[in-house]
Length: 593
Image (cartoon, rainbow, N blue to C red; front, side):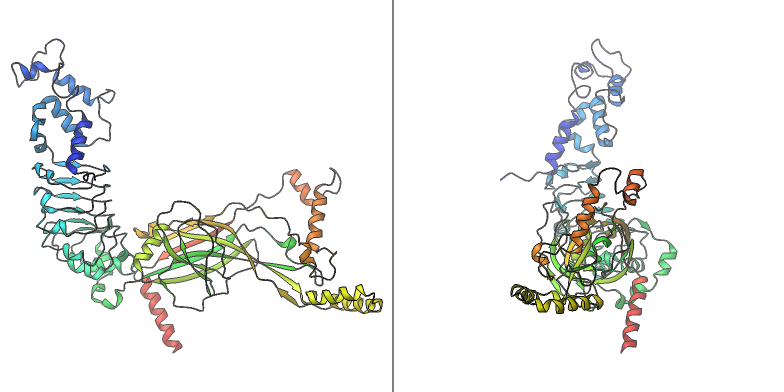
């Protein structure tokens, strides 16, 4: 098994990449007389033939057009070591190079271990090891001169090794985007370990205990900058206000300056523990739905026709984290539990008026997603077709599973537009009556023909009763809405989901077995007749039977199709908005009692 890749090994590779022993650096034929002959401290000394002066060699490093120049994005350490290798290359031999390094940046080099070789850097003040694979850091391997330690985007899940013995007196500790989860980590964030800490980055971990963390951070006398966004605890409504009121010396929280007005606004919140709840309140709003193809051409048939009456309704579905606490079981939206990891069409099995939980039998598409999460699907009430359907949907979700909610926001939500089609048949068109009628006709009972005609005429004059088939649902459009900005400093995501332009299908043709439900197996429903009529009109020779729509197409006056869009909004409620909402709910509950 290969040994873990260490910081020391990455540093040696870094030195080789700089080429400190190659022209124009190091010692060679281009400057050998300066180091093997009589040495002089004056750079203006005459240069032997075939060699280069230190000034000329430095110019090769600094001229942006030189093939030996460093790229503009190189670090100050790169330039320092290259220039030292020109002026005094002997300083880079042995352990001398470690005495020159005060800031070391090793980013995305696959480092797994912070080894004791770091102790050779006796002047090191800044160590940045972000975007590696470090899971543990021992304080025994850190130089005592260190003031800045940056370990963002690693796999650190425990601070015990870092605090096993007193760590260096850091001024900044960066642990963002790691795997810290509480409440066992809070005890390592006190003044006993970090008496000089000014800035602390714990963003985008899995910390959940806000009161416990604040009680430890309040012991840090010099803490002025704090980053906690991206943690589950940051999703609670009182998150920012509680921190601002609890840490009076804090000046910047989540990259936002704390002004005196804000501190005054949240004054006293830390002394109201009943408001500090480990839950998130999220409001989802769905507005106008546009761009639906008009099904009017084949939506209904005449009363008494052999074919079905077809009605259409439309609704919007979206996912929300499974950990949501359902407060209102009588809400009109349908709910479905499933494991989501992809953007896939949703075959919704619950209507806008159905609250039963059903399972999703669709297989997910093979696409890469940020993270698998469990979710429930909610739906707006179904509405008939219109050019613009105003869903006017608003629902507040209360979620106590903050870790699950964070995973849901990282993955985003799936928004879909669903069409529900219902076929309704006349009650007198059932199979038994058809069988009886066919039997009578087969026996040649002509005397009943007059009665049948009278019955049919009577049915045409009076409204018929209908029986409806199970609804047929189809997904017209599906898209993913990114929500990760709600984990940062944003409280609102408002977007218009664009599903593209839909091409309406041709009117449905009822199969022969469906026609048998009518009063004559050779009769065809009106929808099929209209379909054939439209096909016939399409094949009409040029100049004959042109209708108005065809004329408009030829003249280029047809309106451009409108894409299918829906307004979607998700808001993370913060104090005092969440508190006012909650008080209204409590008041309504009191009045109901």
